[in-house]
Image (cartoon, rainbow, N blue to C red; front, side, top):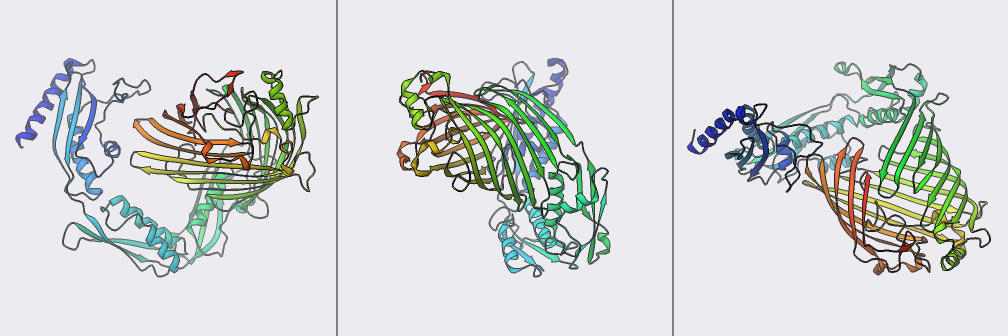
Amino acid sequence: MSMRRFVPALFISAIVLAGAACNEDGSIKVSSLTFNGVKAVDINRLKGVLATRENTRLPLVGWRLPWSKSKNYFDRARFDADLKRIQAFYSDRGYPDARVTSFDVKLNSKQTEVAIVVTISEGDPVRVAAVNLSGFDVLPADHLATLTKQLPLKVGNPRDRQQVVSSHEAALNELRDHGYPYAKVTTDENDGGSGKEATITFTADPGVLARFGQIEIAGNESVSDRIIRRQLTIKPGDVYRRSLVQDSQRRLYSMELFQFVNVESLDAERQLPDVPMRVTVAEGKHQRFNGGIGYGSEEKARVDAEYRHVNFLGGARALGTHARWSSLDRGFRADFTQPYVFTPHFSLGAEGQQWYTFTPAYHSTVTGGRVAVTHRQSARTLWSVSFSSERTSSEISDAVLNDPALYNDLIALGLDPTTGKQEGTLSAVGVDFQQSTADNVLNPTRGYTLALHAEDAGRLLPGTFNYYSTSGDFRYYLPLGRVVLANRFQFGNIHAMGGDPSQVPFSRRYFLGGATSLRGWGRYEVSPLGTSGQPLGGDSLMAISSEARVQLIGNLGGVLFLDAGNVWKDLSALDFGDLRYAVGTGLRYTSPIGPIRFDYGYQLNPIEGLMVNGGPQTRNWRIHFSIGQAF
């Protein structure tokens, strides 16, 4: 052993011997584990494969987080094994020459904790010289071209073992999605004698072109075979496609009837041209009740209660009810879903509600229902056509009841001067389109989501209100090492027939501000103002948000964000030079129910004359506390 490595090893032994005298349990805690020389790999991923781990502490302050129950202690045997794990970790990622050149272990003055510093020499990587696909001629030319382009392995990058495995699986799955369930793919790596370049060749043995055979159903008790079969997108006689197997499994899970679903082929070793299939399910509870109490900086206390029956009257029909009470909104909703209409991809939904919404200037009550036909094209894409009929009633709030200037503004928007209300019926046809490639619903880190909506009210339909509207919401998530860049763009426009603002119900008007948009302001605070400074809502909206999310330590993360946007009276008043801006920072703690979020937003250009809670705005910052990412 070299003197460089002998001295730290001797020091480690001394630490272990001293530990029994320094701690009640005879162990020494790991206060920190840091690396020098790490450039080619993610440090957090490197730490994740090691047995030696540091105790979770707040950065800079050094306090151990109260929710961190585990205590990590130094163990000589585990640390020696970790030195070998580091080398293996680098080798798998294309750096076979990586070595731990030195390490330093420092004991604190109380002899209760150690700080470990590991220095690594990464060396030169083995780079991918070429990626070849052989024997894949059975695939359509365009699919083969797409497969070649989308393989994780890229020429010029370090040869990553995980990317080799992922590319192998992608090539194999492409064959299985074109009628070759028994296909085999072998992987060959040739370094060309240089040791620093690798040519990766995937060779296919497609096997027999096969079709789906008979389908067996197992495990169901109260749900009939017929209900299960009608949800399947695999049919006997159709060419075998792995994607259809996955889609059938997803559709059965989405019915919420089953705790477990597995769709698999049988007798694979016989390689039959007609592949027998088995669908195995395990039924769950059909009736569920959920209740919750929460608190947010905007809605204050919140109470929610929900009941759901996922096999109402049989046939996998779903019935749900939801009640909520908070300072911003409250009411009751009920919904019904018929999961199979004409084909497995179509469903029929209906919902009814009585819902109350409170804004600074007025509060609205919406009573009515909606019927929609939805087509789920794939797991990521759906569209729907709906018809809604509602009775809306909006009334001036107590805060502005005796404000003549604001009263006149609301009359111009359709308020009845004798009753102080706007009332009417709304009949509308709507079209929605949604597509998502996001990797997680609660906390996405890559991909995008797109939601578009168009609505036409009145015209040939009976009702008090006449308008048409369009709106959209686009979100994009890009991982860059430890940082995730999250971006959002929103737009919306309502066009009142004849240019008469009274043709649009108050409940449809736009506002910005709050925990999910323009976080320097509170909810409903950004919109055109009345004469007295109260936000009245508008008919045109645009908002842009961008934030950098980074995992700090453990489950604790931080963000920096910039929000911009505004609401205008109508499209003719839209002015990109009139955007409101807010910057800020925040913390995120990952929990089982989603990220617990704390944001501080600061207004860069406050709204002159804005009235908040009956008085002029006195501060140009807001604090938001809630659950879930802002977008």
